[in-house]
Image (cartoon, rainbow, N blue to C red; front, side):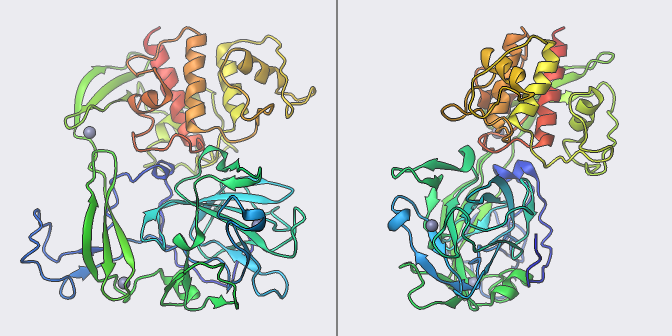
Length: 493
Ligand SMILES: [Zn+2]
Ligand SMILES: [Zn+2]
Ligand SMILES: [Zn+2]
């Protein structure tokens, strides 16, 4: 990644893979807080308008900012080659190759050479021009060089990571970009009615991005959109975040839109009396009211299991009781990482190895073929199989493995005649592979529910009901999945 001209303040974003799917209830997204602690009721009549005295603080979440110096849309959405999508072509100053910086801190989730496509997703929720607070996914095309980008790479807001180009026979240097509200789902894109690739859940760019005071607006370059502008320069916003008066917004409550539940965040929308922006405040999920339902103590080398339930809702989930504390030798797995024991467990079992002696790359992804290889080793099956996919050649070393997985129903083609073996496995596909593997080998995963991927994900304590199972499975999540598989299987032996 080339370093842009911006200077960064590190807003210490804690990048926790589990946060991809929903807020975890740990972080209070405080936009405005009364100086007096916690009023329980909302005495609307007597409350002062929150203009003075009150302590105001920012929620620390980024505002999605326009990712180029020039706003110059040369082909807007729903015209020409964008007839069936919300794409815009950004051509910058038209004086060479303009740079494209991250509109918010994002993670690269997929790359495709040729057109040099990049799919990326914000690592956290971001404030959108529509007033919403949500994840954003984006799709870019035409940069001449994406060799410095890697899947899993995190790019901070303001870092230059893409630029105008003509890769894929583009007509003049530009960046073709598409934005979507929500996390990266289902391989990122689909074939629209005109058969062009379009991002899933595409959204008009002006509902996502804010221009800033320093955005230079080319004549007739606004794409026919009405853009919102943050009253500060891009450089200053990247360095300091957007804080309205410097202390935060002066919020006037519009309405309570949604109350939080055990697992889902609620939110309130306000208008700021100073800058006029619509601001969304997330209300953290309440978390479950945990009660212990049953317990199987560890026995010798065999791990135990404790089953918890919630007093408020019907949720039930399992936690491992370790027979011994597994030693974790990886420098990149923090001592308080909630996945640490699972990572140590699968390493000790020889199921997953570090990417080196000292690092595990917990935020990296597990590919489809990597997970299948682990399951195949566990199965003990060494027979030769074959398969018929256009992207698995006759000399592909994984051909027999993929044939075994296909024949036994563990995995299938991802599109038409392709298996995409080296693509990150989604959480849902990973769980379904494990469930089918267990059925194949006659294993028993009770007391976890095994009727479908989502039930298993929640009941086995892998993911919360709010987590999106279409997200790619990280290596730390894969470690937990495999560790839980082993613990549950061994319980019945
Ligand atoms: Zn385009
Ligand atoms: Zn404001
Ligand atoms: Zn609950």
